[in-house]
Amino acid sequence: MSLFISRIDFFCCLFKCRNVSSKRNLKLISGSCYLPKNSEWKPEGEDAHFICEEDRVIGVSDGVGGYSLRGIDSGIYARELMSNSVIAVQHEPKGSVDPATVLTEAYSNTKSEGAATACIVALTGQQYLHAANIGDSGFVVFREGHIIYCSPTQQHSFNCPYQLGNDRGSDRPVSAQIIKVPVKPGDIVVAGTDGLFDNLAEYEIEQAMIKGTGDGLNPMCMASTLAELALYNSYDKYCWTPFSRASRKAGFEHHGGKIDDITVVVSYIVPSSAQVYYF
Image (tube, rainbow, N blue to C red; front, side, top):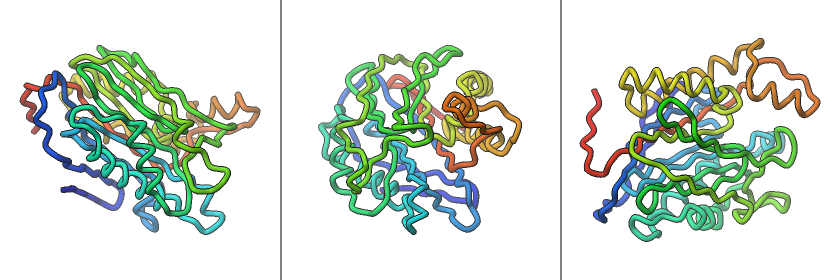
């Protein structure tokens, strides 16, 4: 069963997947926020994401906007890819989802035109995050006031990320980075598309997370806070952002943030026995 809640400028989706009864030490409590850049005339945007909380898996995808010059909406590709990822999660062994296998199966079943980045993160085994990441979407792990891990981006050239698609020039799942990160209770995973990471530096994410955890924000509110901060920076013409820094490093001059779709998924890692209530 799926739950989809929308406003003109805010999207959150939560997929309730199969019940998993296997004994595990940790679980994910997740929430999300999606802010499409053209919310009035294109409310679906080009990003997509999913949360399979019972299976301890999350995913984000960013449709490549350049295809619009050919009359192709890559948002359709991204949404189909994430929908197929949810289906692929159900085909994995209970309690041991392999993100690379999920990504490969989802890709093989996605037939729409267009292309997209993708990042799928699973809490597997006892205390490890496993991820398959292709392109410039990604995730960070926050622990005790600091980001202890940040997934690297994959780009062919500046602002040209690796991307899955059915064109000959597109990348394939075999090019995805396979990541394994040890985690513990209290850690927080923040996954997002480049609309988040192009507009918020690591220290800004850290500051927001420190305040949010201190205020007792639930995952959805935390995701919304981060998305709103990224949105603010994206419209600031004078803000020194990760995108403007990368632009200068590549020999271009870009001032301020980058206006883009923004997707944020926040997952709190807690003991499996924990009873979590938010008001």
